[in-house]
Length: 197
Image 1 (cartoon, rainbow, N blue to C red):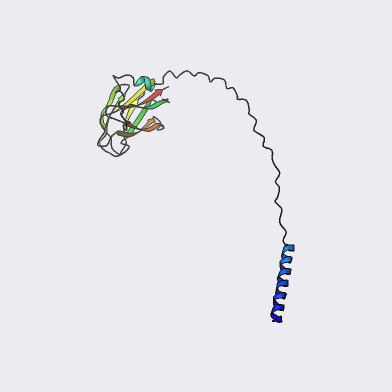
Image 2: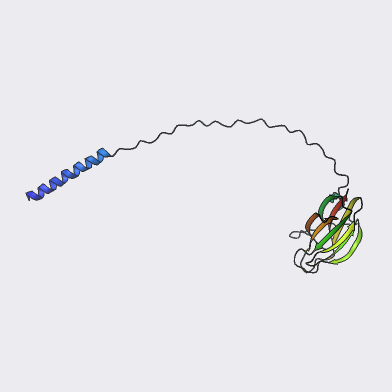
């Protein structure tokens, strides 16, 4: 029994000594104190005074689509309802050119569904009925000095509304003046204006 007591006592003292050694080796690391930075609010710069923009004179030969489409003898009034946005005339832009002639090419831009158009130059019919298909069709026009207004009227909407078409306008050197698409309902027009300088 003495032996067991001696072994237990010896083991207790050994463990206690080992625990004290661990306590001596362990040192806590103090928390690092970060310096407090003072937040400086940004300074407000006085707003710069911009002089009023100079009033530019409108180009005398530019066509204003709002004024153009007021003429109900030439243009059908807008009749859009909720969910239908193509019952309106579409203005495709004013473009200046020095060309003597211009070529207008057009085709059905979506599903070839039997769309037909009529083409006007300065309110005179130059193509009474054109069936749009997947290939480009074209008409060449002689440009007059000043405004050359080209109207393309949708004669129908084919099997799938609206009348959709892609068009390209070239000058006499083969350079593209304009390229776009239109989506208009029956009786409405897409308008492009070429101004010959």
